[in-house]
Image (cartoon, rainbow, N blue to C red):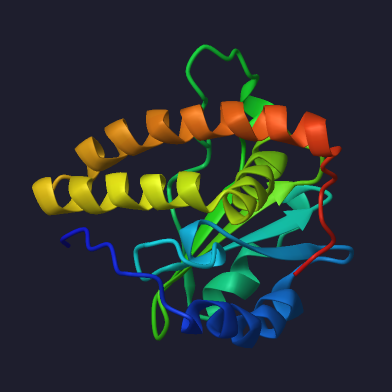
Length: 186
């Protein structure tokens, strides 16, 4: 399937809100849900896929079968990208990834509370929300990559992931300056 980056869509936030309850009904107790990824940043170009982070106390407490029975398939991806130059234990990068099999394209990233990979997408999302120039540049890079290599998803991520590593460096500094705290659920 070809990679396509769309201009910002105002409906993405509303679509997340419509999906939120359905996902929370499948979640273990104390789970928290956030809209993450590019569709969660107003004004940012993105693939037309809603990304959701479901924060849980333990991955072992997730009822995988309930998600499967509700129209999601579990992806083989179980370890998130490790930013260049960082040495992060696999336990800090573990997740369960579900993708919708019908209807709205949706990825549910289930991550454990307090882990590196649970904080990373929230911090970067909030940084991009408060830095529209950085968000615009990131969107343009994604658009150009998709135009140039629409059928090479591996290459797309080989470039996009290190670009995002640059963003997280700025986001970490910004978080220190503004005393960023992890937000409550969306």
